Image 1 (cartoon, rainbow, N blue to C red):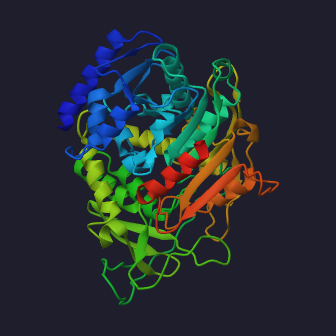
Image 2 (image 1 turned 135 degrees about the horizontal axis):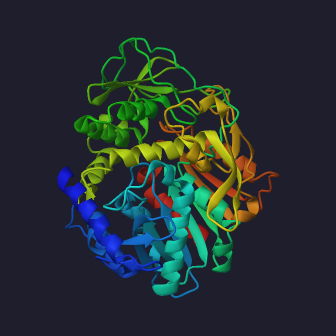
Image 3 (image 1 turned 120 degrees about the horizontal axis):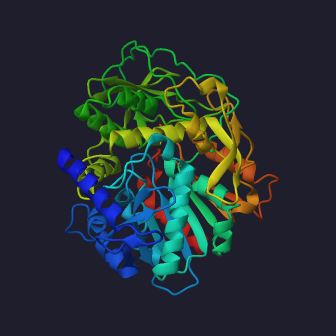
Length: 503
């Protein structure tokens, strides 16, 4: 299946090179669907993965002549006529369009596409599209692609796109923030009549850790004693991969091992499955013990993982030596386990064969690394290009560092991000002025093994200064027992927040 998928990807790329005309979309499907048809398709209970089936039958591949990259997209026309809002979805690391939870888009409370256009797009190199060179895969180029897709839909496909609302999860929040910062000064964007209204950021951080030193090196985790409840594998005396930027050591261990063992297909596939597990909240093996928040004066949890063979063999809290497990491990019927099954189903048929290409996965890691340790003060109005970008000199020796990728730096400058004993600080956001958007909505969660949840607090504190309770620029919602996969644990709650904000 994997070889067949690669062959199909090459054929699709060749076919698109022949058919592509600048400024137009060529299709095996139209890429355009009505709201009623979208709702009917994604709620089809006879399909194992209905959203993925919809992408297979109705999505399109759009060619952007500006940078030679292909992106697969799906555009949903709203039920109600213009003027309407447009939601543009930016995916996370290794995420594909049908991974967005359906109940975040449509449920018993209503459908986002009733009053808003929904625009989904896969990043270059996903879903049979052209695989870009490492230096070409930047947030700037993603922003460029998305803008030209929106302009094409408005010009040729009957959409009326003016008020744009970026929606991002994880890595996608970084892409959404960069899109907003570039759009704030871009002449094409302004001349088209488009503006940024709200940002909806799920599991996000500000990035721009320009001041910190090298990464934290965790101490070993000793063997734990007997505790009540289900027993994970005992953690022996071991060391862990160091934490990079805002990541927790649990996920860092898995990500670094993936890069180390990239040539072993089965090994990588299994570890990527582990990543789905650690998106969700982890639980202590002792009863009545909740994970505390990060920051001074709060119980801290510094999560680390041990990778053995082709799986995460154990996890612990380095602060207390307390064994912990993921909610996937704790229950086979959990949302986590169901999401893992969905992820697998989404990747076992066209247009997503088996898995995300490893090279693409590595590029997304590089995007995240550069966003964490770089920052850009502004952008060029004549192009979708960041400018005045700087990188943390303490991180230039790391394997994911690449000078051409410095443009992926965050528009914000932060500090104290690698010290587990200090709350992070946002010093300034020179590349993202408060005038760039109407309002920012952040949905973060505790028990997050990817990022420190209090980065949401730090971001909102900056954009709400000076604080005015009657005119908040940023609205933060922090969920308990949700983890990095907060959009899967709280999809209906997030739907309600987005719907209320737009209406």
